[in-house]
Length: 237
Image (cartoon, rainbow, N blue to C red; front, top):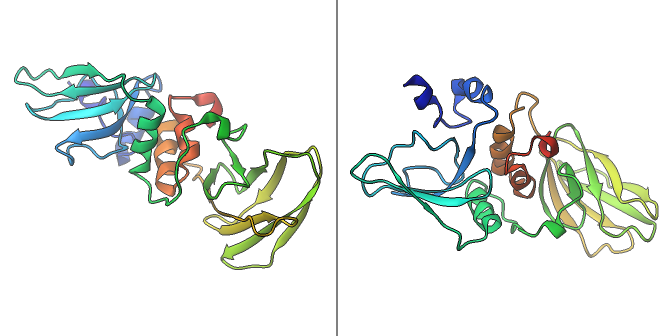
């Protein structure tokens, strides 16, 4: 009975983190929506569905680790009915679920072609929030045909502009940021096209991927967070 109770606990629920971390092969689920609305928090992460108890009339829409979107519907038998929904793009469903956790004002793309080569990179041409495992993040540009000068202007806290030469053929540039710092980033030859970027360092104590996903989402790093689901240990660590 105790084991069944643990399986539905939130990944980020204080003292239960260790218990959940011990079962890394569990099928983690993300809540898309529920009825009534306060039954589950949108974007909430659950571990497994077997012990989710729903009263008659209650329902919860979930997205599973294999990108399956389904709804559990409560009934008088006490065993929820499972209804698979294949009418929506799982990427769109996931983006909406994560967006509800974040206060970010930037739109979330669901097209992989617009993503950086690695999860711990920031596209210098796209404004938004970005997370990193350390105090340094890799800045990336999609077109490296020409050499240019990269300008990084600290906005919060304010500071002097940092200028760096970016050679032709080089797509990446390492930048040491201040945790929570906001910056204006642009190329010197095109100062009117600037990106507003905020960088966050993930606390070292957060090592479990579902925990990282939720933490990044709340900081606004949704483009990166959605790449950690389905459960992807290689890319997210």
